[in-house]
Image (cartoon, rainbow, N blue to C red; front, side, top):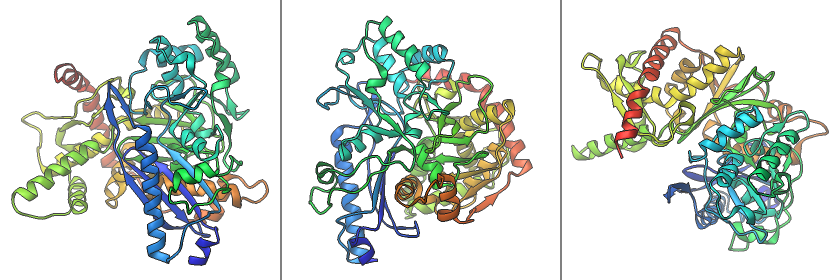
Amino acid sequence: MKEFIESGKAVLGIEFGSTRIKAVLIGDDFAPIAQGSHDWENRLENGIWTYTLDDIIGGLRDCYKQLKNDVKEKYGASLTTLAAIGVSAMMHGYMAFDKDGELLVPFRTWRNTITGPAAEELTALFDYNIPQRWSIAHLYQAMINREEHIPQIDTITTLAGYIHRRLTGKNVLGIGEASGMFPIDTEKKDYDEGMIRKFDSLAASKGYSIKLRNILPSVLLAGEAAGELTAEGAALIDPEGDLQPGIPVCPPEGDAGTGMTATNSVKERTGNISAGTSVFAMVVLEKELSKVYPEIDLVTTPSGKLVGMVHCNNCTSDINAWVNILKEYSAAVGIDVSMPKLYDIFYNEAAKGDPDCGGLLAYNYFSGEPVTGFNEGRPLIARTPENKFSFANFARVNLYSALATLKIGLDIMTKDEGVKIDKMFGHGGLYKTPVVGQKLSAAAIGAPVSIMATAGEGGPWGMALLAAYMIKKTGLETLEDFLLNKVFAGNEGSCIDPDTAEVDGFNKFIETYKSGFAIERAAVDNLK
């Protein structure tokens, strides 16, 4: 392995997640051989969820340094060159730069719910759902707000696009990530030209001369070349100077595209659930939906196939908070229990709960939740004196709550639009404890849910696979065939079918959940 690494045959994927930056190095068989990570958290500054440029670059460097150390410790090898690199990041958001490459306003992440008027107006203009977190919604909201930076804009991009440009000098995006900046024409595999003209006219009516095509990154498909690591890019990643320039870099993607890749769910009638700080589900569609749904985003796979996506801002944060309470309680009574064990206890206890959680109700809204119409959130649990209040039901209702908003969106696709799902693939923190999260997800969706042995590798591994596809595909080999025949080779993972009693229980819970929105609304209005 030392010779393999030092001869530059390994492939690197790096992903900027919401709470962790992670790097995964893969070998010739596509399996991970080393990794590095850096923990970070967004910050709320002047009402904006953001990360600073120092956070971003410092995190990248620390993550890569941890990878170098892992390679040195495991194999005694020095990391100086690679076969290919790919970078991905949390989806969408807004980064605007002037002609000198200076950031004009702090990075606005996916977590912000501050673009409601813009998203609503653009959705009506395009007859196409524009979610609040999309870059175009942020840009137009800034125009509505008459923000001073608008006339200075030379380019706008996402976090993945920003990192890629710093590494290669190329202002490009993979089509999956680009589809969260602006709607894509899936036939032409590029931004929708008719909608671009409509936006330019709208901007002109506001007094702005911006031509959208000139400020958006160029769109590339999976497998296409997206530049090479420059000397400046190599120094950015590795200030110690070991990493050499000239390495091919694949199109940057979002964590939605890498999640699809990492779970082999890039073909029609398959999908994946990525469940961590936020949760989203992607279903590759066989045809367009019949109408616009504000709960469903239309994006694409890294190769440009149409995807119905339900994205929810909140998932495991409230579970994490409750498990931390258990940790504090354990310490208070003099018992030392590790966090992984506490998570397993919590999840396994949830599996014992009643299918309808004994009537308990919980909202996990740390932040706003556009799918259900909340611009702010307040975590809460509610019950009547008659409800069956037990540890098992308490744990279960928190897991249900993590999936509830997602279910509301997916029900629109499966029940209202008749979208067929043969199988969903799960990955992320919700599935670290075996079986439980998987079983409850199957109940929520009403479809089989599989977990791959590689599910824990997640997005950075998926990004490494996209980089490997760029340099290892043969002829006209599609991404779907590359993954199916070379990477996964028949590995379907462990599959759990939905249990009828649990499906019925989740459906009963979701009706209580919907009817209780007034409780959550009152909490938002009165808990300041």
